[in-house]
Image (tube, rainbow, N blue to C red; front, side, top):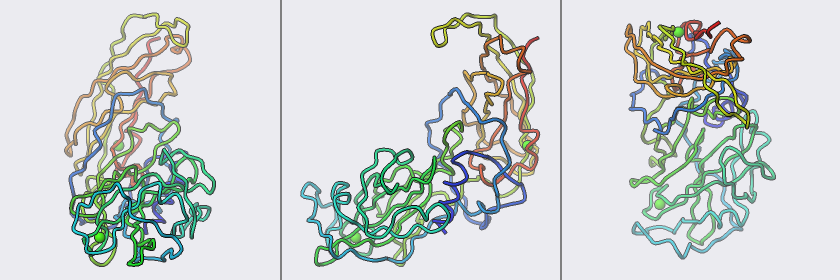
Length: 385
Ligand SMILES: [Ca+2]
Ligand SMILES: [Ca+2]
């Protein structure tokens, strides 16, 4: 149910609430696990987290949101629309069928068939024979009808050797957007044919897979607003034609790295405060102190965790410097690790807050709640008084 799942992501995480009830587990837990190819772009950043991790998501509804997406059977054609093959494109396969390659400009210059967006906020997304504008950002855009075309790639999406076009489109539904990859081809009379939905979900980019189909950069949710982007878990998943339908052909099938529950717990082992330094912020000198905090993180199990990270809640006015928002290696059940993080605080905040709030988050579990006790995922690094 790709549309249903996709819609939930858009609706739920636009404003962000994280984590969930521990009793809910995605179906198919026996599915083969794949290596998670987390996008290696996590950097130490100043994180701003919207208050506490609220456990407000109706988790049952999200239990299947990370399932592989299967496209429906090929749908309607657009007989009125014809394009000539892109003259700049060079054949990379022996054409045994019509050339199905379109440029982004071609697909945005005439009306194309967009399947109905089912469920929830999708009802506001345009569908049918529509002309989609180009969009430059797949998450943040604002166009009439709120549906746009972000990118195209040329790849084999059916049983013939000629190449077709995979087009990544998005519908703005709030701070997030619903995304789909559609397949376009030509029929033997040169008419444009929309062959179905190759994939849907929080897809950021697509690339042609050499074996056919597409490699999609997919995340477990779409961070926005004050939710740190580093909390998104990105995977590369392959989708394409399996001879019968569009289906996931490769890559991870789930975002969580394990079936069983875990219990990460964090505590402060020690804090060292540097001397006050005058730092210019927004044109004014402010008295800042930097804290170096050694955190003890234990996984009480019973399962081994996936990758996780330390995050900083900004309600204490602290600003992350290092070690925060960085993916940490998996933690075996019963294992303990020490993590050193640094942050700085305007010392005039010491009278207003008791400390900096730090918490641990397992990547890929924003909707699934594998941590059986979230109370101990948080700790306070006390400010000096
Ligand atoms: Ca083909
Ligand atoms: Ca815990």
